[in-house]
Structure formats: C-alpha cells, structure tokens
Length: 297
Image: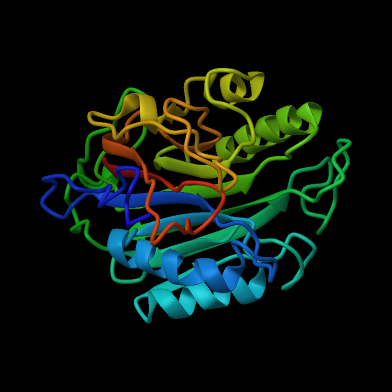
C-alpha cells in the first residue's frame, strides 16, 4: 500500500498565514517486539508522519518511556515533552505531551490520576484494573505579540469570559479506561473539575483517547454538556474524510466511530479538523489514526 493510500496527507493544509496552532492527538500503541506491527516496523512510519505534519502540540497516549525517547529523537531538537509514567517515574504508559519549542513555552504543568485520590501515584478506585491518568500544561504561545489583544492590555473576551488575545492557554491530555463505563464517567467528571480549577480566562485544549464513540456515550455528553468545551471536529470550518479512529490494523471504516478527540473552549476557532490515514508501504504507525486540528483564538 503506498503512502496515504486512504486519502491521508498534510492534514493541516490551510491558508492560515502561519498563525494557527497545529494540534494532534495520537494513541501511539505501546511499543512491543511482536510482529507484525512491532515498534521497529512502525517507528519509521511514525517518524515520517510526524515530520510531514509537524504538529506544534501533540498529545500522546500509551507511549512507553523508551518509545517516547525514540519519538523525541525522531522529532529532533526543536521539540520537547512533558510526562510521567502512570505507575510513577518511567514505569508503564504515559499521557505525554510533545511541543515545538519554537512555538510554545511551558509555564507550569502537573499530573493527576483518575481516581478518588488523584494525587496518589498509580491510584485506581473506580473498578478499572488499568491505571489511568491525565497530564496538563499551561503554555505560552510565542507567536502572540505583547499587547495583541491580551486581556490585561485591553484585549477582548468571549462570552465565556476567556481572553481572546492571550498568548497563554492550557492543554490537558488523557486516556480513559477501555473497559469500565463507571470509571470513564467518574474520570470525565474529575477532568471537568480540574479544568474548572484552572485560570478561567485562558482557553483550553483537551486531547485524548476516550475509548467511547463521540455522540454515542454519556462520557461525551459529560465532557461537553456544561458548555465549557466543544468538539473541534464538529466545530471545524473544514473537515477531512471521517474514519473510525481505532482500526486495529484492519481496513479503515468510513464514517466510523471517533474515540480520539480534540476538545476546545468555545472561543477557540477550529479552521480545519482531520483524521489522518497516513500509511507507508502498507504499514500504519499505530492501531489508531491521529486526529488533528488547526486552531486559533
């Protein structure tokens, strides 16, 4: 199968003048030596995809420490990342966030676990057997000029009260449980609670594998129901073809379920959203497709 045989390509293609932020969420599929689709087979395709798309902000799920180091090496010196293993330190999977240091600078960050004890490393209390967590970062966008509509310098605010010209924003990245609906619902409530505790004047971008289909599960309604977040796919001014975002290395499903989402504050403008079906010589980089959005505010 040639590259982009399913209609993938440069998903960010848009006349944005370089100001828009390129966001990607991607379940990497944890590294293993099991063939086919071992990490050694997938890594060159992952590298090609990331070089092709060059996201400014990349929320990843399932990455193991060595795998994330490989990706950092392949992305090169203009990228850095924030994350911790869900079992603590370098252990187990990460919900790591990569960023282009030429565009974004971290101001603060933290991690919490999706449980009744969110600051106990590795905790799980909602019936899930797998540890689940979230990582968030407050970024400064280096493309925003001082005084360009900033809230503190006469900048306008949206109806939600968010600063429309601020150079800072929050991003949160997560991976909800694959098996226990109760755990997913409690996780969504906790994420909303934590987002609500952050500076309300700054936009939010939420990336993740939510393990449920958009529009088809109470978790989706819980994340969007309060009106503080919107689905960038639905809000986008332009969209790619839709495929189910989990394919498991099987043929892609047109108009299939979207379990990987990019959610944003309502004031964030999504110029384009895409599900990227890039492959190279029959090899996909993961068992999920990356989801992308071109956003600004």
